[in-house]
Image 1 (cartoon, rainbow, N blue to C red):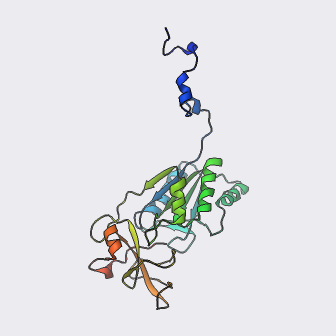
Image 2 (image 1 turned 45 degrees about the vertical axis):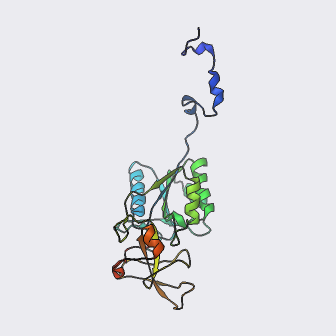
Image 3 (image 1 turned 90 degrees about the vertical axis):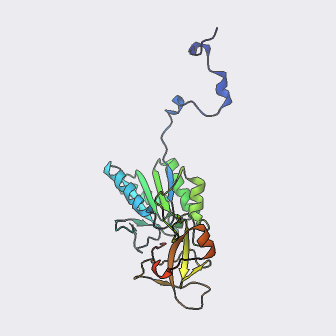
Length: 254
């Protein structure tokens, strides 16, 4: 007679059916970092959440590296629409994010985590570098950004994050379309019309009193007034900005 809890009986032959080790045998493996992507439309609080994550970790004595790419302020900082902001390191087009961590080490500074805001503007290669930091250096990496551009297509950086991230988390704060339905699409509005062609990155403000101008290919005017507005899918597809479009200067993409 063989008892189920009789260790002398030898290993369970069913162990060979799975390549996943038992929970107990995983305890000896070294910890690894996490790569997390929090995403959502404009004005859902991504930058605020990024600042809160940094604050919470710093309070526990952890030291972080805060990065940003194309913040709305135009400065190397993370700024939220509710007025919170923090100095950050600007990630350039050719920046190796691993080298930024090495520079901290060279100054004798430990890095426990990395926060990246506007992560949709990263290159796929830079996202790969973040994954390497999580796996090889055991650093927790928190990325925040928009998933799709004004054409409703995935940003290259966001697409790579969807492919590699250990955890994907939509930001839970709902942003409403003018019709009252939750909005998910970031429409680019030029002179009161939704446009679907142009550069992927165009800096534009969303405050009615402060609207910047940016040259857009395909338009006759040298400069055109640009803003962004979150719409539901139905009104994004139809280009319907609502009955009082002059009051919809609410959002900013970068």
